[in-house]
Image (cartoon, rainbow, N blue to C red; front, side):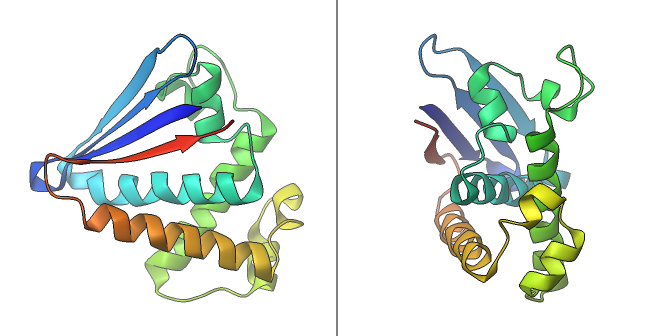
Length: 156
């Protein structure tokens, strides 16, 4: 199982660190103050989407496979993202947009903007489950003092 740590740093900065199963290799990314809040929430949204929908080749799945965080831009040595990773990125973006707008989208709105493969999975039940997982993660994150970290596992 991939071990995920998001460290709460002073000034709103964060640090995402992922340790792979088996060989124990690590990839990490410092999240500077200016973008820290966005990236922490975005990463936690990814986690919620990927775990609820059972996606194994989204952001965290690729990290578990050995991709570096930089490679997940699709511009690294590994080349373009696999289709599922691109779809998960789009779905995460929809949930980020919903959160930023302060509204709750209907399942029909999600389906209208989601990639077709994931759109078929975004029904009222899965959308509510993603929101619930994400809300729990946000609550945990906001309760963490500076210098501490939120620890999650992915896969298995």
